[in-house]
Image (tube, helix red, strand yellow):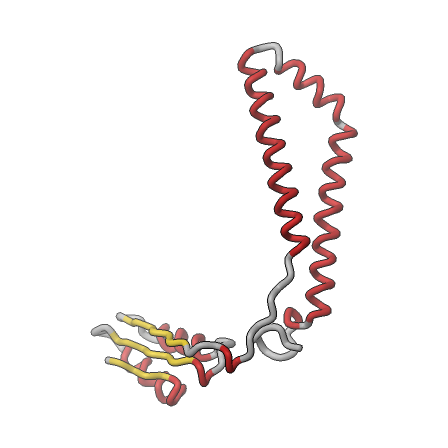
Length: 164
């Protein structure tokens, strides 16, 4: 089952490859969290000495309290994002027949050959060609932009509508 509109055989479209990559990423994130907890246990005594030193002044106490509040908030936010990450399941793509017709308008003013490269890129997109309309509009260019739009029109045929 191809789960995206990309080229057939592309690694990201293969469901087994996706699940392996996702599992590996979850494992790496879990190991990073465990490493951070282990570092806190190992260096806890030294951190307590620094906090005690800071708490001797009002500004230091305020800074420590704010640091603790923001640290707890950051850990809670990370935990929430990690839960969402673990629960994520990508939705399957719809079939090409279910996609809407899409019109891409490429305005050009003194773009030269770049407009040809842009139009080729749009035409090479993963969107089904029968559902994609491409319009190239020359906005009164004084260089060779219209020549390149005309070249693209010949190259892409009925897929491109050139407006001058």
